Image (cartoon, rainbow, N blue to C red; front, top):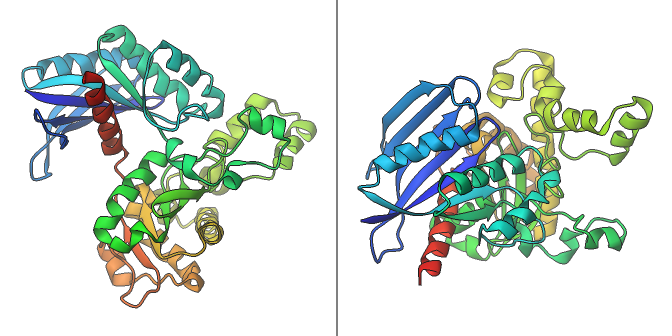
Length: 399
């Protein structure tokens, strides 16, 4: 019987999941199913695709119902998994957990003590951490015998030099955990693991990865290890995103509170949910809608996004001591040739030269033949990284 890993990524109204298996005495994982439960607490849709050996997917489940909570959604998922029990022996559940703080620099089995520590980090990632932990707590009630493993978006960046992990604040605050952490680490870890398959020199080179999507950030790597990144204390920092402001003068927050009388909750709502591309455009936080719009403010939002990405690449190139390779990933990075081309044009001074024909065709390598910097488009696969970490820990625990 194949050993199986369930991977979960729980959001505010959805749960994405994947199932990976390995034959006995094998460490090679095979992607068997992927799915999503979306619209939790509303009109819920439960969709499962089977991943064939050739990579082609076939829908096997597509149900509409009303599931009032994450726990109810996970109960439905467990019922579906039970139906697959004849084929799989589920040995662990791997969870994406956004924030590991200073406490966790690698994946860890979740027990009661670990869960308490993770709950203490909720204020650092209020849009993500509560939903990540809700899924863990629900599984504790629904399937307490199943091992659960937390995999952290912050862990990859713990290799950054000390100078990159400090703010210019009193040292007493740094000691209390107020420091840059960085995020999207599972995405960057995946890129670091596969990039040498495309470019062998990347193992020792200076690489900048642009994870551009609903949440966006950049990461500079040297020797495939993180040395700098644009997100810091929380996922609110760095680039302007769909609804998040990105880097902001702290004085703006003080001004909003003192001059406009805004509460902490109101400022949080503004910066997390009403800013970024949505705030600039007044139309949408979806890059596809902005690119399709003829409204001036939509163009302003796109311009701001491209400008900030290009500017931060320059900053990270300084941190890395130069740039040999640029990688685009994430929803926007993978699918928007227009954004990639525009960013590339602003980075010509750094040696970035994107070939328009390759870029439009969606090639993996999109740099021109004589570009000093190689440029790639590589799809993100955080799910596989979670599955690998979870399987490795489950195997070790079974020894």
